[in-house]
Length: 299
Image (cartoon, rainbow, N blue to C red):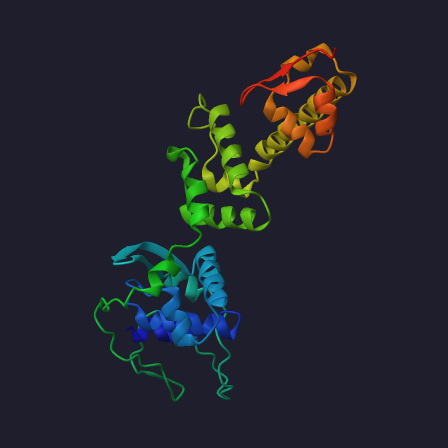
């Protein structure tokens, strides 16, 4: 653990008790430069007694705000655990916690960039940090349940994998945005189709003209492809309805073109209650094999 990181975090406001509790737990696992943190969200949840959703949401927020960065992954028997680093510069930029009102008339910087020397200012002793431990790699936690929790949103991973590989940038942001789109109700398969359409459309683009994944999802460029997919589906439904209407009319009128109607089409029309078996027989259709119905003119 690092007393330096713990003290830096303790003297800053993080916006809520839950956020403060989580960052202090992570600081307890960090080396002196903020690195070397590997503990799963399940581990954080058990030790802080916060809900899993709160832990996951807070970690995502810390990553988005730059308070945490992902520096790698550590393999374990059920997968991997993400390795994080606390960014000291971002922590130092946060609002400091309120200090006791000392009636000395002198303002002392509440956070010192380096460990205090013990010198005094107007009789008030400066902060003295406990000597820092060297960079320490903690023994990784057991990874039974934790590893599964670390594989966040496998569906988002699959969707991102459909994006042109040379244009994937800021993987974490891209995955977060994809997860939000899917959560909003967009079907994963539709999103993949929109990606494929964009990939095909931009196939000949130079690198200066392509859109990288983080911006593509952030700018909601997938909406263009999704609109086209939905328009194509609507056209297909209209064409299907029109085709059914024609087949239904042929059967009702016992039209000679009935000879071209397949068994599957007949079954679909009956299931849709557009025609009855009696009407099919009255049109002179008799099953000959699994594919075609033979049309026989009524005598």
